[in-house]
Amino acid sequence: MVHSDIMFHERFFKIINTVEFQRLNRIKQLSCEYVVFPTATHTRFSHSIGTYHVMTKILSHFVKKLDELGVVVAPEEKDLALCSALLHDIGHASFSHTFERTFNRGAHEKWTIEILKDKDTELHKVIVEEFSEQFLERLIKIISKKGLREEKNPIFTLISQLVSSQMDADRMDYLLRDSYFTSVTNGNYDLERLIRSFEVVEREGKYIICVNEKYISSIEEYILARFYMHREVYQHSLKRQMESIIKKIFQRGAQLYRENRLSFCDKSMAKLLLGEEISLKEYLRMDDTILMYHMMRWEHEDDTILKKLCYSFLHRRKFYKNKIKKSIGDKNFLKDMINTILEEHDKEKISDFENQYFYLENIVEIGIYDREKDNIWVLQKDGELKDITEVSFILKGIDVKQFYQQRLEYINFPLFSDIYGFDLKEALEDKVKEKIKL
Image (cartoon, rainbow, N blue to C red):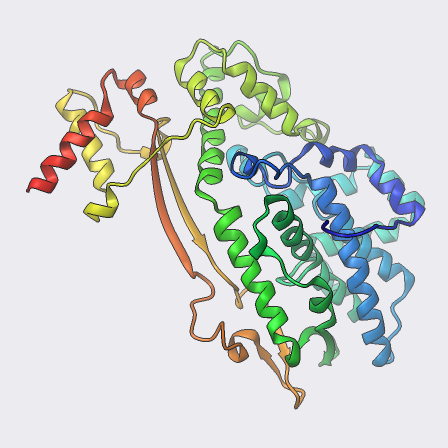
């Protein structure tokens, strides 16, 4: 169990019951992670509700802490924090961030703002009716992070930190949720103790969230949980490979559509493939179901490349992982060798491997903590604030921004054979043997 019972006020239920929020039920939280962890089929919907729940716990803690400073948090400010947490992913696209990279549609936060601003959305109408126009404007400022300086109330900036920072409600929920549904237990941490560790101090008229130094082990546990989840789940090689295949599927689909060789494609998808602007209404139709349906239809197209790419994704048929670099060393060795083999078969050399359908390359970079983005402050006994990397025995001396890096290459040999007409695998094996002999 991730959380126990989650309680809502009636007006938040009305937000959840809008068509825009219900759409999140049709978008998996972890993209295609289910090909690695079969139970990882939870959705953006459940995560958004979980983030709301975590925010209620954080708010309850900080209201008491601020009360000790003689500061009263107004009901509207509490509602702003809860609404921001509940709606932080409302504009998310299918297959996590793969959709954004494939179709160049911009970050999901952009669509979140459009959904909130559009007077025709149910969500806009409910927020204005249940709260107010001014409330909606302030909510947009928090989510977009624009116009924060205009707000004179320092509590407003504090809420923004709770919604988006290295220790926000979003991360606190998804780490526990993703750990639970993947059964990767080292992504777990003690949520209650972590929240208890939070302090708030005033510096130059601003409220800063920090951690009491006696709880430093709780922060280390949380930061390491993030690292392990990135290494073992979010950046898993097979998941990254499948996301790259999705990108190539729609690249090929776009090429075929332009050549009038695609037998099926709905109007909204056609606009995406052509790089044309789509309306908010069209964007909100784009959930996992729509993209999966296109891939299922395209698996039966006449085009061999599109057909095999869809088959690879839909039926978990992995590309062959390159292991040559482990024994040879040169990172371009595989590409150079393929070009040599192509020349020997009187084929044109490849200058741009990134756009080849038979070839995938993924760069995996995992950082533990980025102090340049924002700091996790530790409150010392003397009242001084220090960055976590200055006081943590575990994090001292580590390149926490980029701790782990790996470059992976993959080849689909049957697809190469269909494109070029000969067996690349056998030719590569012969070349490697020749190289090793030399």
